[in-house]
Length: 126
Image 1 (cartoon, one colour):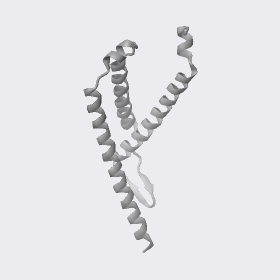
Image 2 (cartoon, rainbow, N blue to C red; image 1 turned 45 degrees about the vertical axis):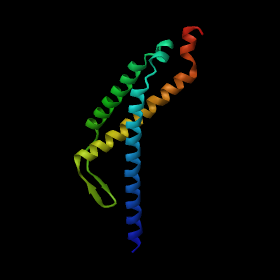
Image 3 (spheres, helix red, strand yellow; image 1 turned 90 degrees about the vertical axis):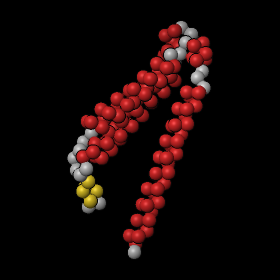
């Protein structure tokens, strides 16, 4: 009977993850619709910020990173709690998502440090 509580907790966690995934997908679609309806081209043009180039570059590099990380991911079978996981697709997908998220976190941290350092302002003489 002690195992039944663990099973119920696992089911609750799975449904919670499904709900959070659904909310994230709804937020992504709502954000895309909002950004397509409310374009602020005059603000980007007045500050000379290549907004569209940056957005397409970030999206393209993220997709490329996910694709490369998933293709290069390990497909070695895993033995977890006595259960062998051997599905090649899910092993590669999981490894790729973990690696790509770590790479994106390191890239984001580098840009934060660069932005806080003021190197760009020093080079422009402001």
